[in-house]
Length: 220
Image (tube, rainbow, N blue to C red; front, side):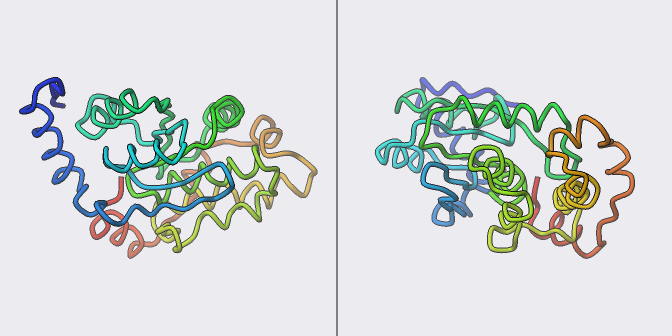
């Protein structure tokens, strides 16, 4: 991992070049996969600094980075731009190919309760991890039932459920099959019956879905 000195023009240019090509940010110059999912929350892909500045001018108060990448070019540029514009940057890492843990889901609920709005949350492509967190946001913050909030996991946002990223759908479907009929909330089911290791072991992705997600779309 390379650290970039953003106080120098050379360091800033190097960070932008790395983000542009290694992180495929050239694809995100015009396509932001950005959607208002409520009156206070936007889901999107990894923003460029100029896009963050535009969001700040529009009144966005918080950006939630779902992809981690602390110290990378994209994260350094994002953190620097947030500091310059007065946006609070929250780092809340989730995965697109692993079963959500109880700690992650509890933490997401607490996150949505404490951040300032309007807010934007993003992963790299705005498809899978942003989809997971959008379902949780609509459920915990807006009170939507899980089956309705699962509309956030669709091809409209670039989510492909036929690959390993479909484990996110499988997680919510298992709750709807095993927990909801018993009258359990999502957190109650996770606390009482949920086994993320078992869920991941049982999940089977389609080979063509994995090729599409991993080789063609090159998702994280």
